[in-house]
Image: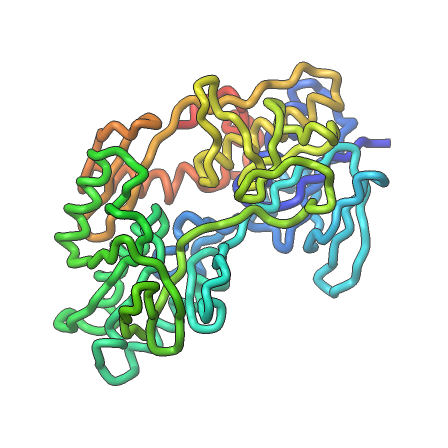
Length: 400
């Protein structure tokens, strides 16, 4: 009877966990493993691009790849992990509850937007966190084009000045002009709790973001927190108000609550604290990866971020190590020493830095070309070719 590696999630980490596990079994000439992916749909949703227009096109069908690599797919939504019985309870597309057993479990259930209890944001706000919510924002903006022009209609408030907020904000001026007309006076305002633009990053990166914001006409409200969002705008904690038909929340994410019944340490973002093999220490047959894993990425104190860049590599190591533990092969300690930032800045261009200290390497069109190559090619699944997929799934192969 085959031993089963069950992977929850078909995002970047889940996809690459499955391919990497299949790769190691193939290299070992061992067909004793069943690799199964449990997710709502057999597709990769390219979340890093959800700030863009035409969001419905930003998916990739995984069925051909799974078929080529003999990876089993089960449609369903994981609800509970039973670590005593080594099984996962899930809801089928027909809303029936059932379970599937595992010999090794990889939790790659991702993350979701965190509203921090802000009043009115769930009812009146928008986001680009998931495919459905990004599509809702896109539909809303298209509908506004048919409404009478007003300052509120032409204003978008982006709550949060992190990478997602910046990429959305810098993309919006051209999107709004395309929808409302080139001569329309549009307004994009970023509300940021910090005291300076990009305060967590290097001075060189901050300077580029400031320059791009100025050139694109983006306003920043610094040292500002959101108090209430309503149907006609946002009220800030200092009592000031911005009238806007569109308020978009980008200010934070938390790991999926799946596995909250497990006795395990989690960090402030809800991620499982894992060892270097990406196992949850109290459950050696359970691995956490992607946005579910608080993992040391090197030996100088850096920790994997909740980004596509880290999720892909975390998935490769998790799949390899889960398979290795069943095949009697030595596992690989997760390491991801290289770190880059490639930030889209809309019509201005982009910026590319290298290292955790974010050394500036490329700006404007040169960086934009690289950004497009990364988000349109590099992060997409490999084609349904065994050799190509397995070469890409090698945890030790150069990624960035």
